[in-house]
Image 1 (cartoon, rainbow over the protein chains, first blue to last red):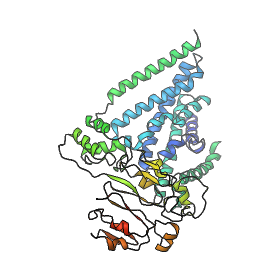
Image 2 (cartoon, rainbow over the protein chains, first blue to last red):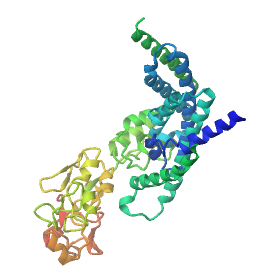
Image 3 (cartoon, chains in turn orange, red):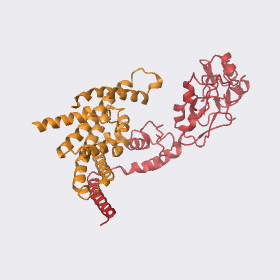
Image 4 (cartoon, rainbow over the protein chains, first blue to last red):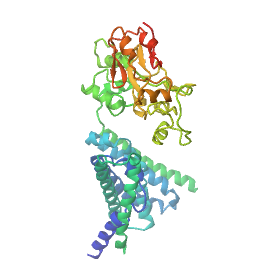
Length: 195
Length: 267
């Protein structure tokens, strides 16, 4: 039970308290780019969740069973990028086969998951914090759920903003950034839950 | 063993494993694509200007294959592309399209129109237009920082010496991106062979318009009265030319007191 509680705390920490978008300011490019439509942001969230969890697990094995025994820790950046890029290719093929609509809606942002710094960031945090395999899975799941929450929140707000009467000079990205800043402030409220 | 060799081996090994997995997955998840799609894509201009109303050239190609769009769907490509698309699709019909190109409805260049103040901000039309409505005295006058030149994917627009954009009719494809970009709305898409063009779109009343620009239309309506064919009618305070009747005789251009009408070619 203690372990279960610990994992649940880790999940909450990863998704809300230490939200990857609002607290660590990673993956902002896809966060802003994919939130103009609510449906597409759900798809992006699912794709990123899949890639993050898979990449975390694969990099865990690569780091602890290949790189560390061979004293090749300095290779971790390039090796992890290799892993993520390959996984994104895989996801792209699967999505293209299963959901052409989603494939078109995601457009350029699908291959761009490769350079989504959230995923690389998660794999590094996993190693820095010396999580074990179970914790790695829970942590990366939490981070990608947090990322998806951030996407859905902004997408829902942006769909409403599209019809609201706002000053000309705020239209488009300026208001998106202001909204994101306010959302980040809201998430700051979770900081008290950290300990 | 040197660490360099080991590193290369390990990375190469990882790459090999992932590469072969991807190759296997690529076969398993292969998507069948209509071979005509890539052929139509090859024929289309490929600038993704979006004038057809579809997301990029690929979207149009897809729509053409599905029968949602006509083979003449590519606005930018015009007749030539439409014929080639029809060839790919195996259609035999004759295709004739009168190309639309962009025209500038303003003659207010450097010597002709008056500036209200000196603008020292960002050198784009949009920024200037947001600053007190732009430095040009006429609220519809061409500001001349060349936003239209920037957006043209076919480099068909260049800035002339008089501070007005010039449109190269051979390069212009009528995609309409400049029309959308212009904050003043003084670029319009019209058939390439029109004989007569209204060179002013001001909303100022006649006397005010005359003060800020010597080529402004003052809304006197002389052109409507002198036209032997009755091709010009007043719409609001600006004349409107009916291109189905106008034959380019040039009488209205002669009689116009401010030379606001432009004769593009004689009959």
